[in-house]
Image 1 (cartoon, rainbow, N blue to C red):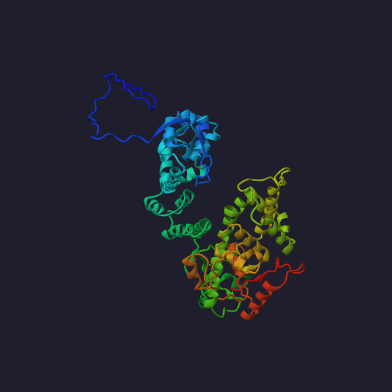
Image 2 (tube, rainbow, N blue to C red):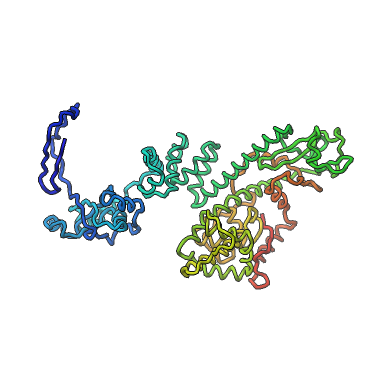
Length: 586
């Protein structure tokens, strides 16, 4: 069947020729009883010079969309699937009687498509002309109505991306055609592959595509893990990323412990399910507290003993024991322990473990999600000059760490994320803007400070670290509670004048603690004498926690006096407060 049509505005005629090969329709279409209403405008190809943007548009952030621009470059005017909507700039009656080619039209809807056509150097653009929108009031009402349009949800976007992929398009082609970033396309495909239960949870949440894709790696985990992730996404801009990092660390630890448990079992070593307490010392004792005729026992020399046992904690640390040690010819070389940890000591230990884990998750998120984008921007962060002056006044040696190997690596991590740099590479280009020079100076200071921040920095009062974190907050960073502990230790500083988080009671932990850790604490005994793990028997993180468990031998009144003196003492060149490590009050 061949159909020919006249241009818009003239009477249309159709010439039909019989086609004996065409299938016979199973039903006959009948015209409705009433005629359809006339369209209120016309569909035309307008010259770009005839179209202007509305200076009073309530949406003032319109810009070209890369995907549409690329479509227009490749396919010309056909690259625009949806035409823009325009209105005459003159009275309706006059506009309808004036040739379209002699008129100027104002954009009512589709300004981003217009700027995309401009960027693609198009001479013409598809447009729907609405005569009934002539006049500023009508145009403004239409624009306000556009605010009520509901954008597709992330789940709907993911479904559309997956449909394009199933249709044979590559991820790069989908990104080009839709304007999505390649990371969003990959995330959309991951979201489309979620299991039904997770997909239902995603539909009810307000997560974006990237966040939803991150959930996919946790869909085999406990439901509580997923709930914590979803809840974190509603708390703050960086809480979700911190929670993801925390849960990844926890999962890696569980996998490491499971692998080590399998390894020990395969070697024929008996594992203890509960850590022995000092009450059990008559029957079972740590290997490091025993000796034989040749001298003190070591783990290596004791593995062949029939009484050799290992306790593997949920954090991966190993403790080595001998059960029935007297019967195996061993003797004790240390005095028996005198008592268990008090409830307060257990609470402090629990808080230390939880805060260390929270800080370990917060550090990489702060660097990748906030500091790196901050340093990559074209604009100098707010009040940078004043901050740099304050840093050099309070801590003249702050840049010293920047020259270290860790400082150089941290600088590359912040300024060139994801890129490998050769040693000696030039970091300061010969010709850049004044703003960029200032940002690079800030980057050096940031790297010098960040390489000194560890998982235990929340436990030590450091004015330079507090000043840096409060500057980040000043520029939009939302700190975790464990980071706020550092800032609160120096609350009188100028850069900590913004809104602050609720201060937690001393016994409150800042993040989730695995129940197995809490159970493990109930059997911990007070260490006496030389009861350290043998070399290689515990991971570094556990050793670091153990070394810092002791509370300062000061009264509450003394601690308050020291803190008062710290925050009220005048700054001087002799006492800049930069690295005076004082234990924080619990």
